[in-house]
Length: 295
Length: 294
Image (cartoon, rainbow over all chains, first blue to last red; front, top):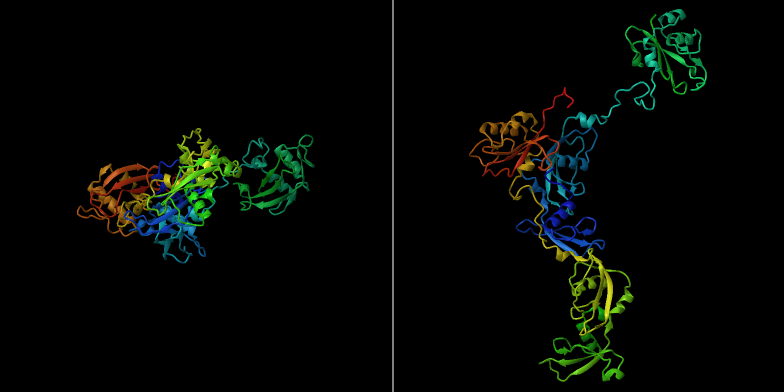
């Protein structure tokens, strides 16, 4: 764990309880009112602060306790150190005190708090400018001040650039949830993979660019039925009475390799016609139908 | 005002007020223990319930004596003002121990001269029902009062015995003069020296190993010690000569160390080396291999 931990209030409470183990109930942050710390001349131990703690009626105590203790002087704490941290900051950006204090705490193992420190942070152009940070007057753990410097470092890809590191990763056609969709035997991406429509395309006079309707001339349905063995029909899908019915649709023409349809790129084929079948059309046959051909 | 001041003082106040004077006090007048009027010959002559005798003290400048008659109050009547709220008390041994809590929470001034000191027996939670009884000799009170008590009302001021606290602590014993080695070296990342450091045995550093660490610290340190680290047996500042390895190995939660490092080496500088001060930890990880996902 870091060298120093806990908020100023937690540190003050912990010190009282550590020094008074015989208290029947330890002092806590909720049942007492903590006054403002009052500066007093330090004794030989360095006790420089008077603090009044008043028991709330919700506590099992009554009355007021006044303790004398030592708040750490930031100058002494950081004696001999050159407090500096290095972080990237985007052009036009401003580092908040909360960020800067978090970095200093992380780097030096200390426990400064945003509410306990007054000072200014940095805008992107103020690289290497020293700043004086001071403990605020009612900080229960610290007094004094120290100098801290921010240096603008390089962008760290893990922190400053790659803020999304949970990637989608591998995706099966139809999604990776095989519980919801157990049967993928008809996925067109794989059914059409082994089929060559070249002979049919030549017979129909397909050119590289023309789009073709599924129901259009040339009986493309018949050729698909012949090559896939699917008895498809244009009509309304019904899982019980019309499992091979599907809506009409239009094939787009694609030259391979295609940047828009990388999944269609396949050695040995120069063209493809692609039809995207939706779940609404026929959920069993949904997916990308890719008809490969050469001319 | 009588229930809000000490009962003895209250009587002198009555006496002075009734006689338009201010001269009588406990210093010049002896006030006898009171007695009930009931059963005496005075019963038919007054509506008061109590009488007492006042006698001048030696040298007070008066002589003679007087009998005064007045009413004492019945404790039980207090219940009419404050019917149900229990009294918070903290481990009272006797009824007299509760008097400060009665004053604090009930606002009623009762003194040891008023109340019989009787043991208080409470349950394991410190709660129960308590009866306080007026002494026969109480100047102002008669009868008794029962009320519930609960645990609480502990006097924070008296129970806190150490009020000049022994903190807050610095990482060094003398913050006025010492530079904390612990804090000074906390930011340093010695991953580049992992293999050499893990090979260093616990105990006093060999001179060769001290040289390795001096080189490492000089390269990494950004602070005022950067150029000063040395391996000289005659230097009393920034010297690793004769430093002792207390521990070198896997980091754990019990050390004041940065938990983002896998390994730490705990070092203690040679006796007599004053700057920096104290044990400190050098942090390092396994070197990163860009081709390995780990």
